Amino acid sequence: MTPAEADQRIILSRRTLFKYKAMIAGGELPVWDMGLMHDELDLLERIADSHPTKTEKIRALGEEWLRMMAAIQARLN
Image (tube, rainbow, N blue to C red; front, top):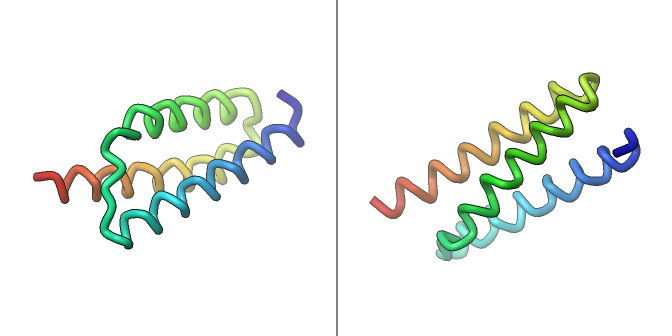
């Protein structure tokens, strides 16, 4: 993956995260997508490994994903 492709994938991840957040704000709980969310975190980790200059940006994005996933879990309990 080139640096430009990595940037595009990071942008897509951020947009997807915001769509999920909007779903949750609207009262939906995308429980069935939790596996996809874990896959997204794995992909972001692989991008960070391949592109160390993007690590901080990816770390912050990954933390947002984790907070959202924790919020979903909290609402389920």
